[in-house]
Length: 267
Image (cartoon, rainbow, N blue to C red; front, side, top):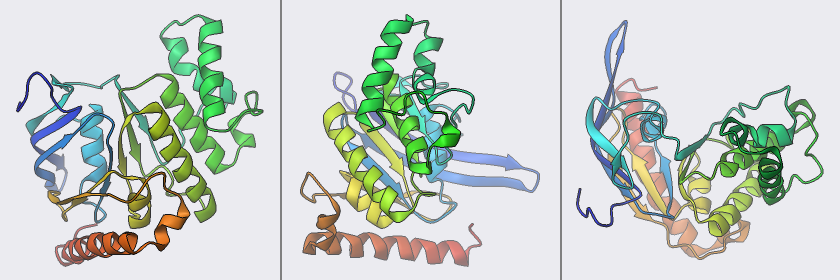
């Protein structure tokens, strides 16, 4: 650890991950070292199969590294990490529970009194602009609304870190844009540390304070770029000269890794 008195929020130190399959070993990640500071919004991009989601699962404690170690605020991650809230591409809502009941589910598991958890759930339902839908069931909601419920549920548990695995990939372009702007607002007001995986360079540029580009499998950190586009951001930032410069920089690196992945038989 570099600074024991003030460690990074997340530290990934020399991490490699190998999966054993019936066809043999698959090296998903190799020698990943990455520090993420408190309050950063780090977006991870790269070719399919480069290990982006695997890295997220390691931070969450869903997987254990084959080599190296991961730390949360200086404490080694050795199992599922309750301080991390995970939002997946699929909404993973309970279809038999209302919006309100889904959002307060984690609080109920912590045996929080009903009135208190109901107040917290309502606060985050309002934050993601779903007031009026508290008593609705998931089947009555659009895809974008379901994802907002997922985000509200994660926030209600007050995680130190929020992990997003391509959460907007299945949504239409307009809904995606709206949710990106809402997530930026949540990041600014809640000051959460966020790690976000996406295939979209535009999404990475819109959301991030840093963009980490992964190499073709086995995934390594190919480039780590500070995103200094002005804030607050909305769709108009995509018209700026700096936006286009950053997009070209990210695209050139990602394209080279995608071509390398195709040449080596990556996914």
